[in-house]
Length: 282
Image 1: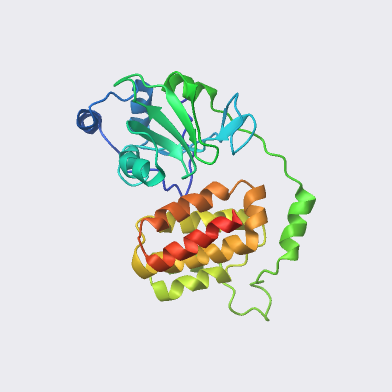
Image 2: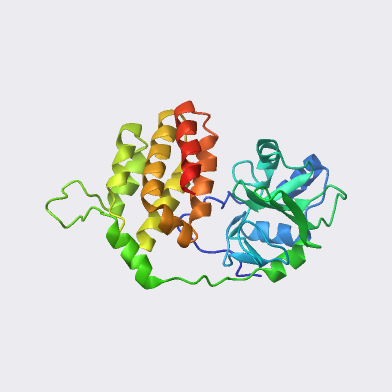
């Protein structure tokens, strides 16, 4: 599995490098032993997006009849890492003694330490269907069964959907306010809440544009607080409400949910209202 990590420009799950000594300290603090293969991967890269997107199941889930989505593995850290598990367990009403290694809020994959302190099985939690079942006897087995699921796409319908939604054309003199990717990145780098709304002026004309914009919003949602969190939530809502069909049909729902999860940590009341409304479009 040496090629498991995806080389992605925007990878919110990739955390700062960690040493073997630091891993030992984490194990001592948690009073458990992490799987050897997990530790090897984390030394190689501390979490991140992976070159797979699915794991087979023999039970139906809210994601699909025969598989679940697995597109990242959490590293060791508090923000988007396994050390965030305690907070997420309380937030989502999950059982104790789990280390969450993948998930988006309604669906989680976890190392299950409920009956052991070492060599944990891997369990899947589907909160929409209230399911909790084992998907692998070990982390090694879990890794060995990851695969890339090819989703069917109707290219003709996909293009029609985007044509039916008016988008700003940056080359059209009647749309002088349209901005390009470079301007979006500049706005987010400056972190000026008063400018964030301008991100919605980016012309979404393809699935690739939509995926890029959602990922950069998700990336900048990490640690966002106050007005910044509210403005990002507002832009996210604008994009999702306009492109909900494309988001669901192109498997971008998890990107939106991960961004919303991060923005929810801001505890900004106005942002929370928007994020609550966001669920209606997913």
